[in-house]
Length: 104
Image 1 (cartoon, helix red, strand yellow):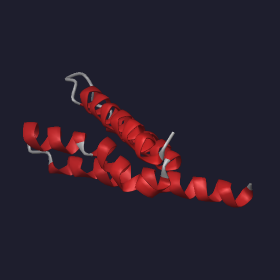
Image 2 (cartoon, helix red, strand yellow):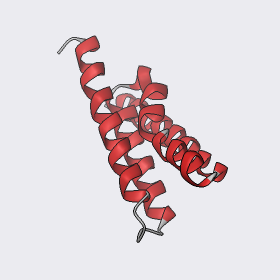
Image 3 (spheres, one colour):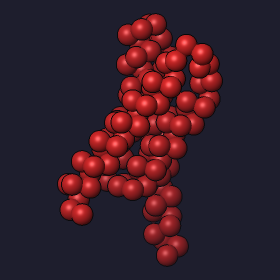
C-alpha cells in the first residue's frame, strides 16, 4: 500500500479509536481515568509503531478528543494531559520500532 494511502487509512482508524475512547471516558458511570489514559497510550503507541514519521499526527488523532469534550462540557482543563499521554505513547511506539529495527 502506498504511504499516503496507508497514512489516510491509519489516520482514519486513529480518529475513530480516539472518538471511541472519548465516548467511553465521557459516560456517566465511567470514573476510571487510569484505564482511559492506558487506552490512549496503547492506541497512540500502536499507531506510532506502525508509521513512525507521522507519530505526531496519530498522537493528536487519538488524544485530542478527551480534552475537547472535557473542556467544552465541564471546563476540565486537566484533561489536556490526555494529549501528553498520547504523545508519550506515540513516540514510545516509534522508539520500540527503532529498537526492533536495530535488533533485526
